Length: 526
Image 1 (cartoon, rainbow, N blue to C red):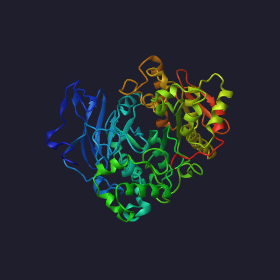
Image 2: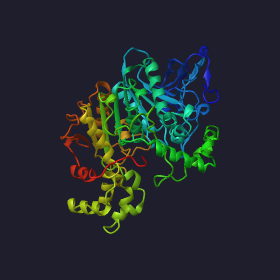
Image 3: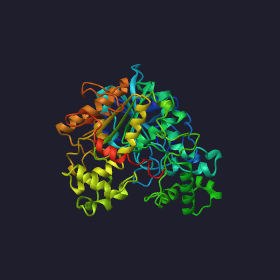
Image 4: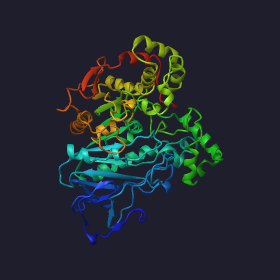
């Protein structure tokens, strides 16, 4: 373990006692000896947050800088006790995320007890950020509340992102770089192998691992469902707005890689030099235009016929993971997370809304036709209402509907939800993309949560978190906190509507579903 990043204490030093109320690394130290856990790579010392044992910045992989664009390896064993009281480095990225480094393979564990043989369900969360940004260190992902509510073990983690984790070098160079399109996902597999090998020492059951993630995190998980190397490392899946059905195709991956090289002044023949350029130069180049889409260049999982042998949910759901219980969810107002920041979007008229809507649609339909359809079908809607509803249904809903439908065709155990409860703190945002994170983690009071801590928010958080916990324990989300939740099947399409009064609806927003299913859906940039 890197001695410049992590203080190593001799075993003879023993565990330090911390006084109640002192604060370190985002948690509240409680009185008593600091917990020490043993892993296959060495001992780690965490701290107590109330009655939960917390270990932050536990290394699960070696520094990736010497192996840039190649599969990571497990760390070497360390001597002594490694301090695990602060989050580890985040992957290099454009976002102003603190503490970035290619040495980023760290995870965090929250547990009620250590090595007590209780075999608690394990919930491993994969953060979002479009495969490009983020880390497992957000206060919204803090695992204390779930541990206390459900007697589970919670794990979050960091892994390689953007060009460091996903790129087209495999198409250009092959050889040592053949898997470069998926090394970020291979990091996730390495972390799940760490869970398999070590989580019993943290009071968890390696045979009962639920992986869950929101947005890009959920997308990475549906990609793992199509990756043979991930088989057996997880036993249940929850995707929250993880709408991917396709990965990046190999030809588009190569096209992006060639343009990226050209931007850096390198020819394809010199592509191997990317492995030794300063990381900062690669991050700066991520601001270049994407050759396929309208935004900055975008790298994500590559379907390379090998490490990822097929697209996640095209042409169907992967049969090798069809038996895995799965929850698929979205929020009612997904698109507001991306579009509500522009004041002009709240001043649209019937004359301007179609032109504004057109570039937000992923499926190739005529925006004017869509606006006219909404205006006729929902005459009570304003132009602003139509804009946000159509942007959600024509951009964010199709992917998760395809996932659920294809799973239903395999008769795979699948449950669908839609979050209708909107933000009381910022009403114009509604139930926006990512709003369900704080509710699922029972973290309404955490910084950046816009749920508030009123009785209605706490009621929805109770329903969502209890359903997720029940699912982690049994593979079925039904519990006392919610009405009976039937599996998603065709043609019924039973969907749990999480709201102040949660309830089941069959095929919610059916007319909008049919409207946008008139055109095929692929992930942008595929």
